[in-house]
Image (cartoon, rainbow, N blue to C red; front, side):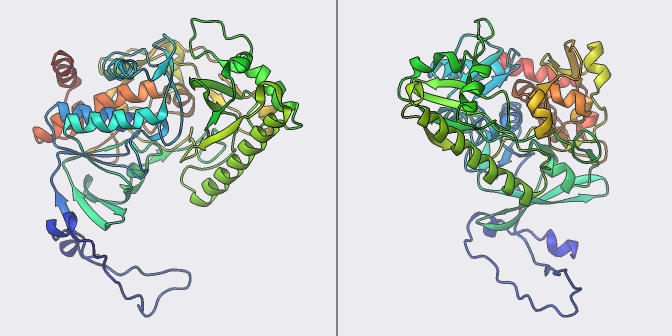
Length: 464
């Protein structure tokens, strides 16, 4: 594609035109099995200091922090709401959330709206639907521009520096430029498109951690289901709720693909459930993700229908909604200027440029259905000592101007199994947002900004 044609700017088309281009597809001499996509001009928008791709937990924190640091921020999200796994994924449960900064601000706002259960700041059950509205309001308050139903589909560099991304949406293909980009897609989509190296799964390919499709359930009387409901609070005895629920599912003549099925109470008679695993599904294979989603939904309905037929406390149980997206535990881990590793986790590493201190256990879900029969998850025999994640792990090694936050940062399989929970993702997002904003506004690259400047920016935000 001719670069001059590609970068020809058309702001009017980007913001107002609804007519999509019609491309003739009669190119002669096409190779068998290949389609030569014709080159075309794309509307190009240059309006942001920082572009964030992905509005999950890390992206939310990154965008709001960058905006509060003074940057003009634009966010692209492929789902129909903000929040990612929190909302579209119906995660419903926040882990390792006893961190300062945005984590505590979010908890405070959830409390003000009576949208979380329990008193712990480490593990929280919340209302996914209410979270959608809260996050939208926070974006508007911070002045973040965001566009839903929009997926990043290409990335272009000038030399080693990422300068432009292309998105696909109902508006067609559009190009966007910015000084700094942050990959908060979870699966490392932007980093991969930009040509960054990455790791995935336990080795170069699967085995990888399984995916799970969560769901909201409605019951007749939540009080009768108390023995099966997780207490959502480590300060309270939980009994044996998971094993009790497993026994009930087995009474339906079905052994679930996740042998530690879990129920949480969202509010009143509204419950959240996780009780399936889909094994060996790469995050970048759309066909396999589709198959996994269909299978997971079928199993969810089978289990719920079976429980309802048992009667008693299960009478009237029904699915209110399954998640818009299947939950992904294992995505690409983009190569950064430091790789958080197993030794860091074991030794409790300390770094001068630490952006968060992770405390969550190594949490490796069964890699196969056979493994699930003996252990739904394990910690690889590793006892975690609270360890630092350095800023360098959030800065891409192969691509300048690119940062990462959330589970796609630079790390190995073992460390990732600990830091991937959303309390850590939020803290990483804050750090990436602050550094990205400073870099863009001072015409530096992220790796040229010392963490001390990021700390100062976050303290300023906290004192505002």
